[in-house]
Length: 233
Image (cartoon, rainbow, N blue to C red; front, side, top):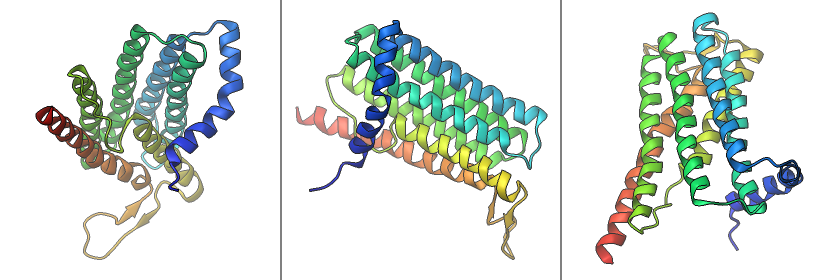
C-alpha cells in the first residue's frame, strides 16, 4: 500500500499541536486571530529582509535565515487556524474567505521582502524569478478559487500554499545557517563561466527558481484540468 507522506506528515503535526489547539479554545482564541497573527509574521519577515538589504552586508545572510524562520512560523499559523476552526467548531464561510484573503496578503508581503532584498544586492536574475514565482503563487490560488466558483474542483498540482511556504522558509533558513557556518562568500567557480557555479545565496535562490517554474506549471495544469471537466460535463 502506498504511503501518503503529506497526510502522514500532517497527522504528525496535528498530534503535536492538538494540546496547543485545545488551550487556544479554552482561552477564547479564534481562527481569525491566528490568521491575522500569521499575516503579521509574514510582514515581519518582509521587514527583516528589507532591513537586511538596507543595513546588512551582502556576504551576511543572517537576515535571510531569520526571515526564513519567521516565514515557517507564519506557515504554522496557517495550519493552526484551520485546525482550530475544525476542532473548535468555528468554521464559517466568512472565516474561509478571511483566511484566503489574508493568506494572499501574507504571500505578497513575503515576496515583497524577497524581491527587495535580491534587487538591493544586485541579484537581478534571481529577483526576476522571485517575481515570476509570486505570479505563479497567485495564479495557483486564483485558478483553484475561480474553478470552484464554477463548481469545478481544481486542487491538482504540487505547489499549493503549504509546499510554497515550506520551500521558501526552509531555503532561507538553510541559507542563513550555511552562511554562518561556511561564510557568505563561499563560492564554487568553473573556468569559462562568467558567474559562480554555486555560492551561498544559491541555497536561497535556486528553490525560488524551482518555485517560479513549478507554481506556474501547477496553475496551468489546474486550468486544463478544469477545462476538461467543464467540457465533459
